[in-house]
Length: 336
Image (cartoon, rainbow, N blue to C red):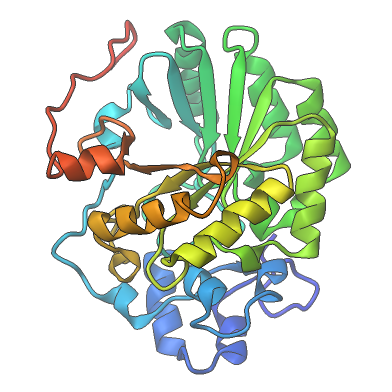
């Protein structure tokens, strides 16, 4: 997938990016890449007008990324304390999340899962243990996440889906690939997912400029095949933190038959301090958007606290001053 310096390669890395954006500097690119990969798909790169435009800021490192911040948290949403077995997270009794890989087509600079020194993929015994736990857990819904679950092959993806059925009736695939690498959404993938319904696709789009012609085609292929497609966006300072941009994004998604599902408040991951904004400001923006769009185009604005309790409405979080009792971890007969 990654072909440094070859025009035909679908993913480019620091050397080629430094030639395209010399203002970033080789040293910044090298230092950032050592902490968290700097990789950008050619499809995404074609939509970037400048290193500091809304798409450039999401994919290209900025100097602030290298600076520690007092509010950084290595596990910003508390997944470590909610992992019954490696590669599985369970914050709610009726569903679980499987990290199918830590690889991505494009590495967003605000990502909350930065694990540069951990394995990119589970070993076969680790994956088998995770799948056995899921099958025996009684969960009704499985979320395939990562990294990006569409960074693995169709064969591996379909094998996992077949392995958890019929014990788990509903599967969600949380993926940015239709937005960052729309060519990944080919006929074989779409048909394989359609044949394994119900499979829900949750894509991740943050700005209207991400919706190019090839992205539109990828989204349409999935929707036309009967796959429900929803979107989750992240509220990001310097990218989409104004009401007009958010309203345009949500309405553009609805026009493409994609339901705006969540708007996430940014997590306090190391390196993403420049993307953060106060919950109070985010809530004011959200209320302005709510006055502009219909209920069909209005996502739920949520925050995922670091104590592992799961998503809360930002309005509830702000009203409580950012505090609420932490519930106990979900019970599981296989917790280890």
